[in-house]
Length: 109
Image (cartoon, rainbow, N blue to C red):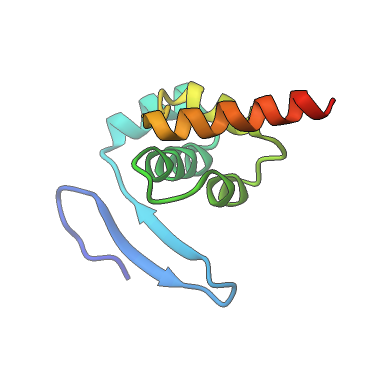
């Protein structure tokens, strides 16, 4: 049972048999109503924002994030990040590694 607290935040975390974690997020009804008008699936939106935020700050890798969101491709994952304005701040080294990987693929083609 969730505690009855006036200001609602993430209160509850429960490990499930599949090693997934369930979060219950309660928000004031006016906020929830506005969000429901914009998005039919509030649970999915919350999951995308949480995972995207964890990816952006470097807590999750791209692969971990894509698996958590069941994304079929990097393009689909990037679309989610774009939709929620959650692009990662890349370091110079990360950009150079990505560009080297692209160059390597083009060199083999």
